[in-house]
Length: 134
Image (tube, rainbow, N blue to C red; front, top):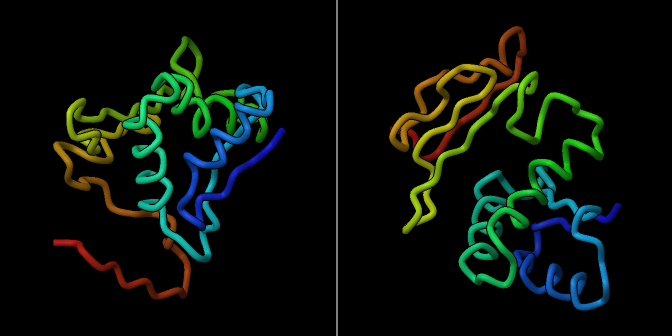
């Protein structure tokens, strides 16, 4: 497997290089260096690749869904089928913006707005400041 990090914000370039050199797309994953960039950078890079139409949307999305789940051996993630968690990301077709997110049966984002509070900090002494909430 090969992973491309989006920190340099040149994902389309490296996917093109990988494909042009015979890389197997089922063995490619895309991630972000969480200590340097946030999830928005990853999403924007995927959006840019999808809008470029070099690869079908299903292949671009597999880089951050199915392929990643397979590498990490997350057997209930990365696909929509009976027995899987059924995490769903719904995007606006024209703008490619996040409209709805459902994860493990819970509505996380509704009509573009976060509706579920973060729980990863429960029991933690960390302090987090979010910019852009409102």
